[in-house]
Image 1 (cartoon, rainbow, N blue to C red):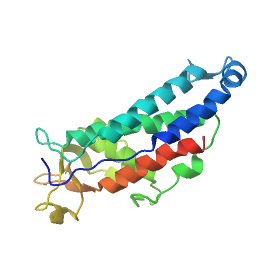
Image 2 (image 1 turned 135 degrees about the horizontal axis):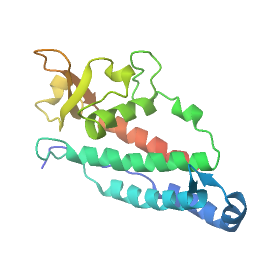
Image 3 (image 1 turned 45 degrees about the horizontal axis):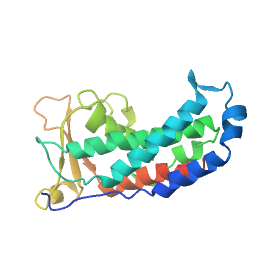
Length: 212
């Protein structure tokens, strides 16, 4: 057991309202708007249906998750959360693209993480993707986010939940990712992660389904 556990609360009604609106116009949407239309080579209507099903199931799964437990030296529950949260975010993005709803303004926001990066142009979207890359999908080669990793952040050997003893040393963050740098005799850099910011971002991106 951990001293603190975290659970996100995504409103399933957002998806159901979208699905209801889609159902009301299903015949028109499927037969006219999407007849012969493709999304990156795939039938667009199939993509819409897949996104809806994926969002529904994944939102339920994320809401059931309790985060805060260590396993084999790492916060694997957080890694699992990030990957599944990305499924929801990517599905909403796909739906917006299929329905030609611009998310340009939303993609430029920097109100959750407040991490503009080295060039001062970083967004919440950029930083979330950097965290996922560093901690989950590219831990041995985080090289796709120069504004955050620059020439130093290279590999992430571990990401851990903090506790009452370690939290003060890392600016009261909830998770601490160690990022080794390409320098001899270096302990690496610390990347501090606050779970409320992660939750806020995921909730916001999911809520964009209302706009679609």
